[in-house]
Image (cartoon, rainbow, N blue to C red; front, side, top):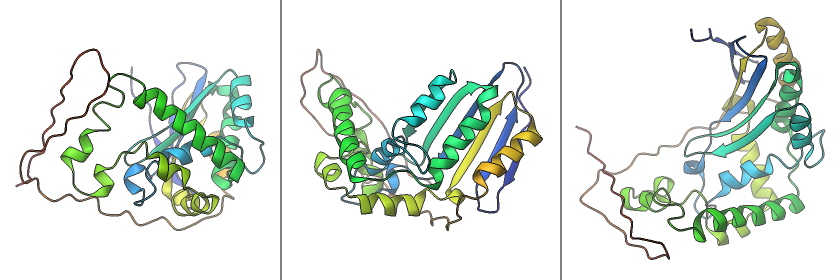
Length: 256
């Protein structure tokens, strides 16, 4: 099957848009990638990028808490988000008739998520429980991706645990969240992608309708994540209840 032709454009507020029409099924996928991940977290705020991902589902300028879930699921769609070293993404997959609904939902939370103390405290507890479930209380939990960075790298950006320390998570404030949003969740720091059963010109018009009035803010300068050259071997041993011992090996090489 031939790859879909890509159509790219940028709105005046800096939002980059990619359209990929594919009429093979009456379905569309709508995603927004923000150019921020856990490598951009400041010291003392480990886990903040992932925590903020959770907050983006807790209501927005026009919608109450859990409304995003209800609107997508009532359309027969699915949704999720995820946090990575260098980006955070949010997506919906729905019947193509619900395209405008998905665009509205993403534009509304790009404009103004509901950053309240109640939502923050609730989601801190949710993230802590996720860490307990996926890492602390599971054999080999988080192995090796949580443990290896501190062995391979020296700088905080590359070596710290992106899931976050409980002390750091609990010390987060609404002001911290607002600053993180203002800095990293600007239209100029995001890419909107729409793929599937769509009409290109009609979709462009819908994108401009819903995202065109999201206030422009400067795109943050991308910091350097450079690492000093490795000076030798490193290792770390950890003890946790598990059926059998497990070993993971990774290597870094110097560039010529």
